[in-house]
Image 1 (cartoon, rainbow, N blue to C red):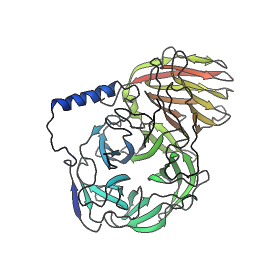
Image 2: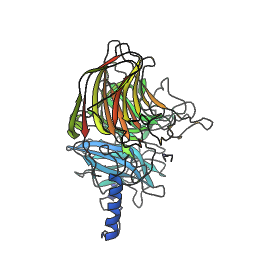
Image 3: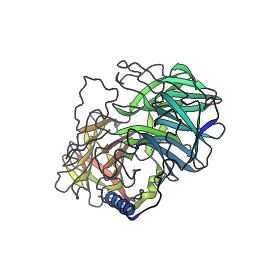
Image 4: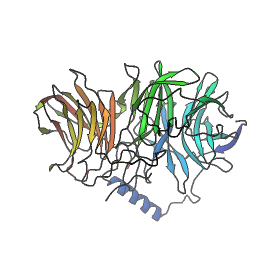
Length: 511
């Protein structure tokens, strides 16, 4: 079986409360309870459904596009788009105090009678100077971008201005305030294939129509294809630089680092966060009370079932020493899920060998290892290994190519097709979409440098952090029950492993 991914000018006029979109009959009968139990049972026994990544209970390809991330009064708030049927797209509200245990709210942000939009697509949230939380979003079939705002403590009640849409035309907005000026980026396609660059708008209020300033970016960067769009934008300052986080629908998550002069963004570098065969999309960030810039992204999957759709683990972004790239680390709150510590003593691996770890195994765990590669050019670890070797997923450091790789060729006996382009939005009509066998991320091991890997497994999700400067994510579907062993290998020269620490990770999701 193959698996497939399917992918103002006035004061308040409309008031949104938690009572919206509720069933007319709130009485629960025996049939309802039996159906709920059936769903939960299926979810608990799903061999692929993650148990500590944020995963929504019901629906195929849900959630997608995290949106509206904001930290307020000690609470992390996050929305995601969900499909309510008949091409209706709403925002579902979630909240957490520890980044891993999430509460579902019964107040989806959705169109109301009289609203110009028929659905709600991507956008962001920010804190206004008057203390309100403002959400900017693309109004589906409204022709542009809209806003809603809230002073409710729990962000359950929202107001929309009569002036919506405040930007027209518009697409995937990102909005923020500096001093008394409001800025909005409207997404676009800056490349040569479909020249329609992202646009900057300004206003003196978040609830009034905004004025077009001009192109948001001064130029694009080498290595960006002419057909790539800038969507799901997130624009923020790190130290003395500005970062434009975004996607192109064809190639996934990526970012620019550069300078912002109040009128235009001047990009100085461009980096990928997803590579051919990968599934890391629609990144969204917030800044919390510790000053941390925390990121989530939608991990596209390729299976169907009772639940389908997962967010990446939260990552902390900082500006790297070169001031042209980002350092990426797991949020430290993951440590609260640790139990049943495991360890391996220092050992060496001979050329051409794979050493199975005697004490560390599992498919839901965190593992940390430090490898001295010596002169080895190709080495790493294998996870989700079956005893007979039919299933295994190597994590490879290839020094000649300067890459960190995930090899999917033997990851499953029922392997899906991993394609170069995960989506065809804005895709050239005559282009092909070949299958790929490995996802390859740039990663150069400096002379004398050891490789510090932090590896996270969650049934079908693999996330690897390398030396705090690269991270790669992959979805795989092991079918064999004994595909839980872990190995360390080297191809051409011996390597030394200083030691390995690992922990089981307790489920954070209720089901």
